[in-house]
Amino acid sequence: MRAEDQASKVTFWVEDRDLKRGHLLHVVNRSSDAITQVEVLIIANVWLLLPEEFGSGGDARYTFRLSGIGPCTEALFDFNHLYYRFGEDQQYQPMTTDWGARVQVRFIDRKAVVWNRDWDHLWTGKTAMPEPEDPVDVANDRSQPSMRPLDTCESN
Image 1 (cartoon, rainbow, N blue to C red):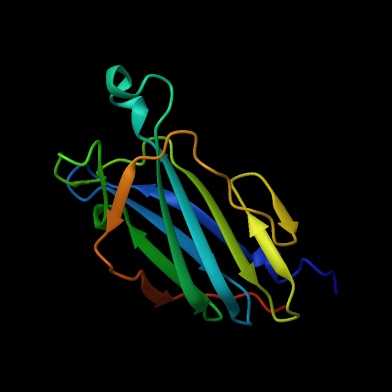
Image 2 (image 1 turned 120 degrees about the vertical axis):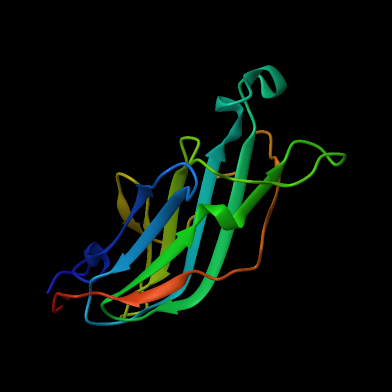
């Protein structure tokens, strides 16, 4: 069995729902074993919508830490529970779009190996999550992702 067998079964994607319901991030563990110490980083480029205020920078960063995602389970992160503001004198606004969001997921497999996944790569080792150039003030409503079992699962 290859070292990355379990890790290759942990994936994610962003579902583009209608404008009212916003986006939904799916983090899926299709493995028959749980993953632990899950860290999900969402980096949204808010300057894409308001370039006159941000120029070419301005990342809204959201980090979620979960004790784990069970076997054959999907974690759902609703972007409507993520908020941003452009300055201390502004109200927090819900994130209703993914704004070209980048996502990185870090987790530990059943053999205690630390894995990282982004849109294009899967690698081992505890590497630093990317730092923002011009961070935007963010918040979330403290809601945790909803978990749901998958209809099918792959054995390791």
